[in-house]
Image (cartoon, rainbow, N blue to C red; front, side):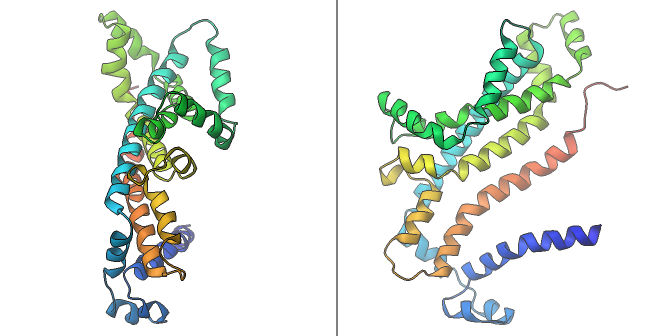
Length: 266
């Protein structure tokens, strides 16, 4: 079993390793068939060419701002809504939750035109709010947090009420800390999705100062060149990929270590 897992991991990591090596290689060394030829010609010129061709730092900052605020907003909204659907009985709650679930089956491309006209109506086109707000609200986050809160020990809520906690105090001081694993998982999914978003930023932005990294990669591929320079292109791809990989690696251990922890000792 471990051998199979190792082979699967190698098959998935090999393309990324080749991409990294080529991005650090000179133009001539890309054709070398031996690894020594690559190592001897390692260089950062491809990354310099990318930075000279497009404003990478500006695109990176835009992607980071949009992804961070979208992630924080998605976690906040989904946590509150998920707790309400799981623990608070209110009129038409099940119907409303069913409607939210139905939105998960609607392709995102269907909402692009209504969202575009809505953002233009409120004069938000080509701005950070236009890039952030659509990603804050989603049915998947509400569903994920609701399922987590359904397994939340009710004894803790009863004990906190006996101790005099209000619903808000119980939510902030007890529920949220114990829901950190689910919130971390949702945050990772949201950040990666927002970081890799292409269609919506392409439609809602029209100025260079508001473009994100995926748009920068597409622009770099088609600008100022008739022949594709693979070293430069893969260097740009590495710049786009590394932050999402680091976010996943940073949250992976937290999720694995804390997901099975409960608030009640049997």
